[in-house]
Length: 456
Ligand SMILES: Cc1ncc(COP(=O)(O)O)c(C=O)c1O
Image (cartoon, rainbow, N blue to C red):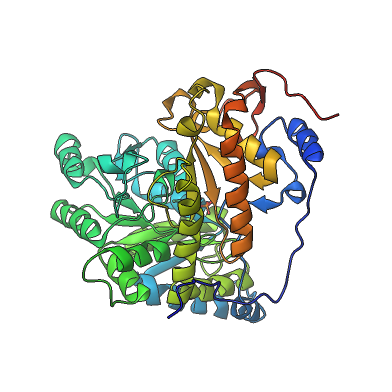
């Protein structure tokens, strides 16, 4: 079989992207106060801000959309949505939501109270915020290996099982209403969790009668990493692996904007009848009736098809290979990245890339701005700007939208990063000129510590 992994699709509908000159980008960047969130999307050439809701849908999804049943209650689209999700996830109750964080809000409202503790391998920021909003404590129990960016290990998303046991012993099982596993670990570099670890965590949970829930956003990518890297799973299909994974748990939250292959949507699953009833009651209050949950019938149809397409092996081979292609091509030239390449994104280690810029001058934000200036690429800082002084690393995430960019787009991104790497000594740190009281990275205004020289 030829070695080249090709995009397993051909393109039927195209969306033009727009070139800008370096001089235009200098002005655009200054107008956006050096914060890439504030740029108009049409002035971005390659948009790697996020893989969430930015994917391309298939012909089957668009065809299914035409079957959307927009009935308020008892929609046929909901039946198809539930059946498709149950086929993979296997949980008794499937509750649609408008996106992942809505599922999180409902889950933690129903299951947690003030003073509770929720362990996770690593909480994603909305997950943490929703746990904290009900007065519970969100505890990250990632294995120490997962915190070393340069270390190459197959499953750096694994939970530290000993730390979990110690936490249960310390606070008591009554204070832990659920344990969560995030597959793959977005905040930790898109690293997968092994089946062996899922089995162990599930064993601890069963032993203490604590429910185990998955944050399942990138379940298909996690399943494929298990197939590639874990003994005994080589000959299993991604769907078989996903089914086994979910069978170790009691429910999940899901953002269908990732491995649901849709532009909007999410869901909450549980095996628990009484909890499901409470969750549906809350759903009606803010999301909608339980057969649509804030989504249109056509969205339910797109997700029903999308979750199945995410598990197709040709797609996953291309998905994981194309992300690794970007990571490996820059790492081979000495660019420091979080190793090994994750499923949905490559993370540049900005502190190692720009050792002359101290964390309080936002090396990640400076690097992200430079990538835009050099080649019109939009990425996102995950570091001191996002988390303040608590940031342990300064990373720049290049998230790859699903089925959107081709290999030549990625070759272009590689070229731009290497170009910036060549002249990294000349990049300046940043200082804040405005910050909001919370989630400041979305609206922060910055400027270079010394003013830039504009071409005109
Ligand atoms: C791991 C993880 N959990 C939860 C969410 C929240 O999902 P949403 O953006 O659909 O609310 C995200 C989104 O990026 C995520 O990556």
